[in-house]
Every structure is written in structure tokens, then in C-alpha cells.
Image 1 (cartoon, one colour):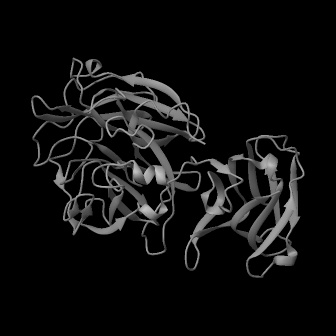
Image 2 (image 1 turned 90 degrees about the vertical axis):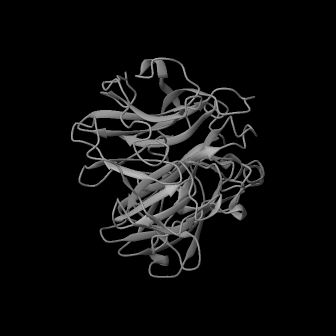
Image 3 (image 1 turned 180 degrees about the vertical axis):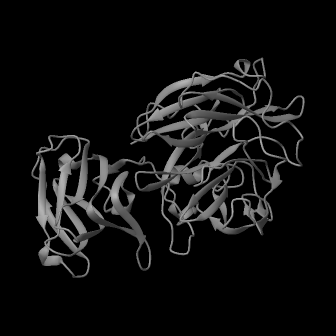
Length: 430
């Protein structure tokens, strides 16, 4: 199930930000499917409430900014919210004049209308010893906003309180023994920073390092892309340095789930006319990121004919905690009425039997299966006393409500206080 309304339109270099419980995609835009070089003439904002169906919200052209004229170098971009205003930074790359700068526009909503209140770059060319492009915003837990940028060498600066300038001069980020698609000791462009459980993750494409401080130093940890976990079409249609190159993107969390969104060229077969794709992200107990799976099934969509579906690959959840299993894989712990959603399951009309691998503890644990799209009365429950305190068990039952294609399912814990349910996978049968 592909995101048919956005794939094939050259929307790339994706940063997804969650504002007011909606996903906003801030992206650059490859202009021509037959191009033999990077031609990017504008930046775009798209939005979605399910990561599948996307709506084009606004387009920003360079002539609407301090640049004042059309250019072909509208490179990567990012946005952040502070005090009810939205700040959208963008790359100005002028190759004929060897100029790289970062500009910024401001709006009262995540989609504009946008205004260039500075009338000049936010970060000027040659301010530091790296090319000034590919901005990333990072907002820490205390509300401090940083901007990062650079290629090969990365810099970070704290934004001023009014968000219209930076405090002091950007400082370099140290990455100990980095690796990247070009080999040991080298990073890449398209830096990004996110935080989970108090640990800061600095990434460049599919490679990453961690630190206990946003300004580093960072320790290299690994690469999240492994060819063995990629469907053939994604592994075979790739950049000259292999499948770990060119997957520039960003990490984001939404409703209890983590995702990585990244550039993808397999749909067009042309590295100069890219799309983007999204994968689920899971973390190990030591803070490492589990290598991601890359296949044709978009996040939020599932194939009932494809075998077991990992419970940890839900799209949205509440009171749901993902944790690593011994050996490999992840499971989900539901408590306090927690639930996880699988909003678009395809092929269920041909496989109306569900098998759920689970464990349950507590007083009278109950698991509800609900149709997300259908009548709220279309639900069925399992009293799980017989599996309480046991090892992993499989509960098999036909789905009693009307099935359409696709259909969305919610698995919800509905037992008495203190009961918990752990889910490992779901699978469908004829």
C-alpha cells in the first residue's frame, strides 16, 4: 500500500514534525523526473493524520524570501514551534556563485502564510568552516531551541529568545570515530538531532551517534539500514555507494510510536527525482537503534496475507510501552486501558480468523478487539484468566463483525485495575 497521492511527485529531504496531533512534512522538491542533476525550485509543506494520505498545504518559492529570484538550489528544510509561532528554515544553495546559506520564514500556523521577517539569511555563507545548508531544529525539554547544519563537519547554535537570530557563533560538534556511506572517518550531509529517554541522537542519513549533552561529544553507534532487511526494489535501486547512502531524513515520535522518514529513489529509479518513505523505529535496552525494515507496505498499512504482524509495529497507541524481547524483536505492554491501532489492514475479508500471541497478568484481564472505522458496537472481548501468568500463548478466534477492505483494528486492554496484557504479534487465517 503506497502513499499514492504523494509518491511520484518528487517530495524529498523529509522532516516530519507533529503539531496539534497532526503530522506536518517540511520538504524540498525535485522538479523533474528526467533530471540528470539536482533541480529544486521550491519548498513544500504537506500534512496528514495517518501518515498515508497527504494534503499539500503550502509552497514557498525563493522569490518570496530574501533571495528575491528563482533558483535551482532549494535544498533541505525544517520547522519548529515556539510560543505559538512556527519557524521554517530552508537551504539556499547557489552553486554558480558557490554560496550556501540558511534562511527562515515565520507564520502563525504550521502551514503559513509565511513571512520573511529578517529579509536576509539567518546564517550567512562562510560563517563557519563548513558549507551552510541542511538545517535541523531541535527543541529540548526545557524549551531551548537549537539549530544544526553542515556537511562532513556539523555545527550547533542556540536560537535567541525571539527566534530571529542565534546566540553567539555556532560551535562544532565532535563525533568520535564516525562512519558513513563514504567509509570510516567520514560523515555525510543532512544532520538531524532527536532525543529519547534522556539520550541525544545525532544522525546523518542512516548513521548515528549518541551523547548525554546536545552539544556533544557524540559517540558513534552504528547504521540503521541493513541490506538483509530490505525488500529487493529498495535494495537494488539505490545510490552509487549502496543502500545506506542518500537516505537523508528525520526521526519523530507520535502517539507512542517512533518513526524514521527518509529519501527514497526506488520509485523513480532516478537519484535526482526522489520520493520519501517511512519505517518504524525500535530501540534496544542499551540505547542502540534496531536496524529498520524497509519494504513496500507503508506504515499504518498492513497485509493480512503476509504472515505475522509485529504488535510493536502499531501506528498509534495509548498507555502502550514497547520493549525488546530476549533474542530479537519487540513486544508491547498494555495497561490502564491502553490500546494499539492498526488502521488499514488489507485482505482481511479473505482471512477472517485472527491469532494473537500474548501474555496476561492481574485480576480478570480482558482484551477487546474493535473495528476502528466501523460502529463502536462492533467489538468483541476475550477474558484471559486462563493465560494469566503463563508464557506466551496464542488466542485464536473468528472476527465477528463485518469486514471490509481495508479495515482498521484496535486491540485494547479492558480488564480490572492492575491487569496487564503483553502482545507480541497478530496473524490472520482463512
